[in-house]
Image 1 (cartoon, rainbow, N blue to C red):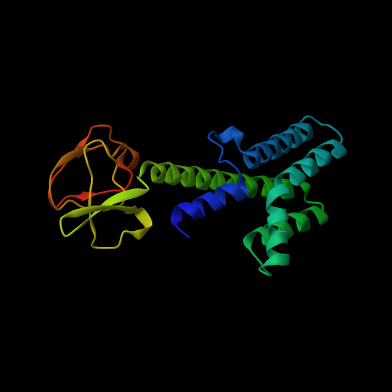
Image 2: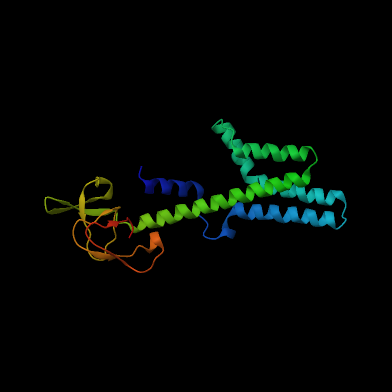
Length: 207
C-alpha cells in the first residue's frame, strides 16, 4: 500500500477533514462543554440553587467525555490497551462520584478540547499532505540508455532517472542531473516566488 492509499484509507474511515475549526464535531462538543462549565460557575456565583450549577456541570461533563470515553472503551475492548483516554475518563467519573462536579466538568472540558484541537490539526495536516501528493504526476518518463519509457510512479526505483518537461510537475523527490528550470515550491515552503533550480539542486514531489 502506498502512502497515498493510506491517506485515502484514513479519509474513508474518518470522513472528509473539516476545513474550519467550527466544522469539527469534536470541537463543537468541547465548546458546548466549556459553555456549560462556565454557565455552572455563573449560576453558582449568582446564588442559584446548588442543583442548578450541579446540573450544568453534569451536562458539561457528559458533553466533554462524549468522544474520549468512547475511544477509551474501544481501546480497552478491541485492543486491550489502557490509554490516557481511559485514565482521564476514570478520573472524571471518580471526581463526579465524590461530588466534585466542578472539577469533573473542568477536567472533561480541558482534556476534550485538547484532544479535539489535536485531531483537527492532524486532519488538516493529512489533508495538506494528500493535496500535495495529488499535485504529483502518477506516471513518469524513465530514462533508460537514452530512451524514454513511460511507467507508473510506483515502478520508479532509487537511482532511476526520469524526464520532466516544461510545465509538468515533479513526481517524486530527487536531484537535477541535467537542465535547469524555475519551480513553484509554494505548497512546501509557502513562498510564492518560483525558485531557480539547476544541476545538483534538490527538487520535491508536487512542485
